[in-house]
Image (cartoon, rainbow, N blue to C red):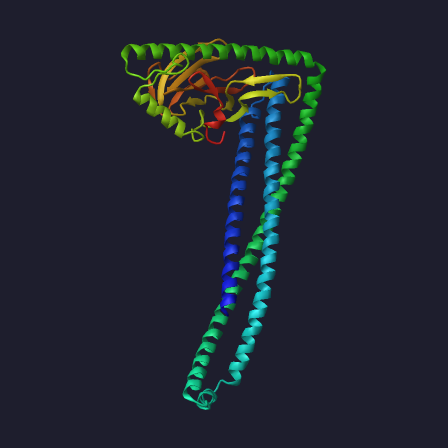
Length: 413
């Protein structure tokens, strides 16, 4: 093998390795997404559809079905991405295999030629005569060195053929595995599309019922929105009052830093500052406020999918969970308040420096004001509505008096 051939072989091997690693990483990411979506569908079925109630309203049924359809569509999209990536990998492998086969053929022909030449001059006498027939010592030395290099080159050529044959065999194995994997994904997507079609048919029937009395259902949604807004105002007032009380206490003691905006932000002790920093550093890593759950209402404004003139606002996230599920603290902190809210049972406020997490719709409260809590500590039981059978926790995150999107803070929400 010449220096150029060696260099080209190393370059090819390097690109083969790096491209394979990149493709494997991408496939792993997609597979993680696919498994998460499969788990979400499983939880939606378990938490929203396992115990159907006759009293369950059309609006509630439409919302639950919409959650499942959206998740199913995401699953189909991710599975398609996986299959398409596999198609590209298969085509890349075919190209690499063809390239290697061409190189292997060339190497074998070159090697066969060397073997033939070696065979023709294989006798010791021939090799000795080749050296001894030199015109001078220098020529004899050069001929001897040539024979050594030729033997070494032949050995390297043989090793190169062996290495490339192994690479070719591995590529062929990968190709067979990739084709099988792609077929499995295609079959799973067929099943998912069949289920999606059935769910959309159910959805169409529910929408037809909804459209018959659109005004009535729109009024129901707006009524719920007004109730939610009223509760939000109560929560915001409690937080503002807590900030004012905390700052007044700190000013009296002189043990905390105050600012010009002290009426809107907590004056923090050194310990509280450290806790707030820890909370900030865990953004996107916080555990879920329930052990198992699925988000059924996201933060911010949302246009109703079937009633385009109706827009709702959620100040946090609403999470469907199982019967008798326990709400749990998402981070170390102190119970700032336990508030009884009409129509929403209890709201538990946990303070983490200048951050507050709120757990709404709790019964059988397990903590009291002033308690120190730790990450994942149980706070109480999430209430289950008797008419719908739904167990919904509303979870909010505040920085001082400013609402934050909980999905930015909780891991994979």
